[in-house]
Amino acid sequence: MSRLLSHRLAVPAGVALLVVALSFVLPSSFYLRVAALVWISALAVIGLNLLMGFAGQVSLGHAGFFGLGAYAVAVLPAQFGLHPLLAVVAGAAICGGIAFLVGRPILKLKGHYLAVATLGFGILIAMAISNEAWLTGGPDGMPVSRLTLFGWRARGADTWYWITGGLLVVGAWIAVNLVASPTGRALRALHDSEVAARVAGIDVARYKVKVFVISAVYASVAGSALALVNGFITPETADFMHSIELVTMVVLGGMGSVLGSIVGAAILIVLPQVLTAFHEYEHLLLGLMMMVIMIVLRSGIVPSLAALFSRRRS
Image 1 (tube, rainbow, N blue to C red):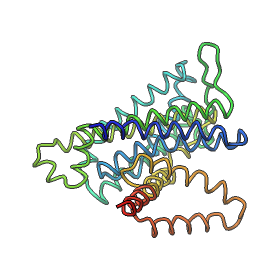
Image 2: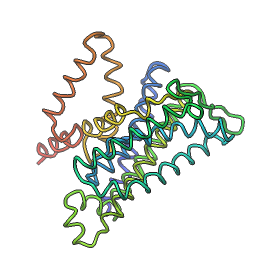
Image 3: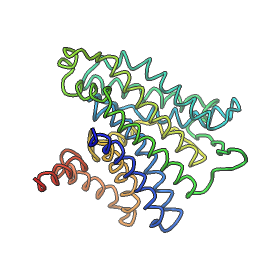
Image 4: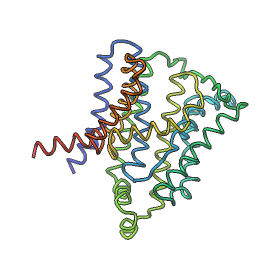
């Protein structure tokens, strides 16, 4: 029991320590902004990892929820005068509701069929955002109202660094506790074998929808955070390539690892910034490094390194 409790506290405490420590070493607002983008992506990836890594369900359309959350804080304040914070909550509720409605029929599918169905859902959301120009600004995007609270206005890279870092700590804490709960044990059971889980009395369909809704809420909050940080939003946040990017972050960092989600997000956000020094070879080097990582660390970076250290200690 004490080991379980320490694990529940160690992961969010480690993430909080990372956020605080980096604030002392990052030299400028540019690096703080890049770190904030890492925290935002990591938040979305943690949610997707709950769905893919722990429950074993594929989603190639998760950027759709990310985009809906982003446009919620753009459209609701502009069209209905809603406060941006309430728009974040409303966006999460809308994404959770949509995930609940589409999750049950979609999650009956398996393997490639499930992947294609979620891909279609993501494309549908992206097309709706692009085509409904009267509401979303169309392909040109739209501005996002700045977050103000009791006269205080959130602006500057350092402010958003701490806000997004706080969101990531809370997201990691919720995920770790969820994984350690009976729900988490049920998710791992259906990941290993849906038939065995059903025989053991687990309501497989209910738990699939449950984790799909939770992962959609994570993506929505992350999307809202990105929109508020940038002050502007475009349909690219919901497109297919962004969905693939989120899945790649999950696999690179490690399936079924909360810390792996952060590592995967950091690699795909930070590496392109570093590789800009190589100009024409940027994408070539990025692809090559990803291939090497997956060949050498097949289970993802964090689980593979954890297994390596465990073997050496034993």
